[in-house]
Length: 123
Image (cartoon, rainbow, N blue to C red; front, top):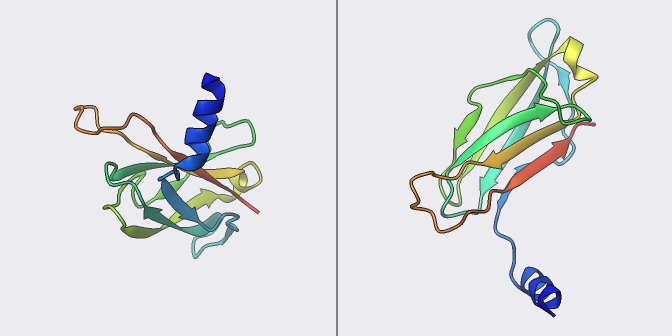
């Protein structure tokens, strides 16, 4: 019975998280030799969260080195931000996912303990 109640609650209430687009970003050569680039956009739908960490991973979820302006991005509620990700040519074939994960405050001021993680898969 409890299983059905939990399923009902999950289906009945919309999940409020953040969005990251495009879903399938394409890495293209940048203005730098042997460096590839993609542009991402994030939208924050969580009032209690304003910081998001960016990561790039291979198919086994091992981190891939990358560069962006900020690895932790501050986005106000209902705000959006556009950012570029740069990856070395030697790592492009291994790069599979670019992800953003909400960073919750440790001071206890937030009412939720649910972190959201959104990933896009490179083409």
